[in-house]
Each structure stands twice: as structure tokens, then as C-alpha cells.
Length: 243
View 1 (cartoon, rainbow, N blue to C red):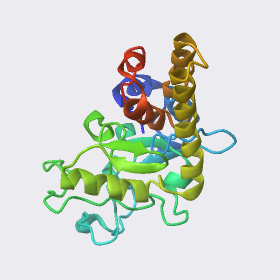
View 2: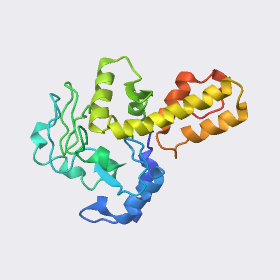
View 3: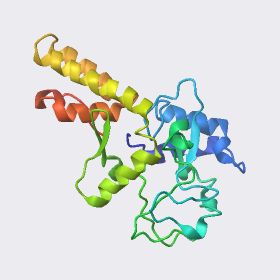
View 4: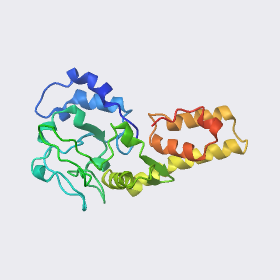
């Protein structure tokens, strides 16, 4: 998962019209795709040969409980209806992250911290979602990787719970996604091993790693985690490892 600076994307708001179902607007979908290099904002899967889903981060129609976690019960049958045409609530994603698929899929889930207030239409209370939000930079840095595993980059128990819940709901631990993500980790490992053995030059190593950690690369956050874990400091200094 990479940080999505959604306020920059919202500068295109005038292109998207004012329909009753704004998330279906073609220009909006095209702009959301282009802004994040045609990748799912949750899984970083490339949306090649598949529809791009516009997810309502806070569900628009109803909310269902996820496991034992708290949720906004007063809105269980209506969802956050007042946000359905608010593009600040939209997140571009793949079908695996958005729909119930295997053991995951976001669907109508929006679990909250036990200490969270409940958001109302008046917006007077600030909720504490358990889901990691790709449009919140402080959230995104909590997610890291080790091999094909999704891990928390924080020892704080609440942060670890948030990562655990998010990796299930967003389907980050779907076997197919894990297998593909592992290829990125392994590729970084191989490049670093070749550099350290002298088989490739420093320049070639940096060039190859730059492509893997680039924002347009599939599973680039995993590549960044691998570089941070395994690369020598002189190589890290040559790369943009900002999440």
C-alpha cells in the first residue's frame, strides 16, 4: 500500500459531473485509474484486464459487523449515506479487495476501535477506524512486509490490530496475491545478492531497484520493505523509499 494524496486528485472534481451515482462517472474512474498508475489502492495489484472498482471507504448503504469489532450500529441499515457522492470517500480498488472473495473482501465492513466515537451526518464526532486508509499517510506507514507476509511496522497493540484487520478485509493475504507479491520480494533479494557478490555493478543494481520501488510498479511497497530490510545503506541512499 502506498500513500495516495487524494486532495491532488480532487482538483479534477469539475470533470466528474453531479449525478446521483457519482462513483459511476467515466471521467472520475479514468482519473482515479491514472492518478495511481492503474493500481488498486489497497493491494497494489495492477488493474490490467479487469474493472476498476470505486470503493466507498465508509460504506454507502449498510454496515455489517466484522468479527468481534465495534462498528457504527445506528447506521447498520443505511451506511454513511451522506458520503455516497463525496469523492473524498472514494478509493480505487480491485475486485479482490472490494468484494467478498475467499476469506476477505471489504464489502460492507467498517470496523472501529473500541474507544471510537460514532460519526453522524452532522460530522461532530471523529471515528477511529481499524481499517488502514491509503489516503492517510500516518496509516500507510504502519503496513510493512517480510517475504510474502504482511506485518505491522509498529509495536503498538492498536496499530498491530489495525494491520491484522486490514490485511484480512483488503484480502492482502489472499494466496494468489501473496504469491505474486512474493515474486517482488524475491526479485529484490536476487538483485541485492548479485550486487553483493560482484555480479552486477552498483549503477545497474540501483537502476533495477529504482524500477521496483517506483510508484507505478506492482507491489512497490513490498519492494521498499525488502530494500529497507536487506540493502546496504549506500544503496538505500540512492533510492526514493518514501511510502
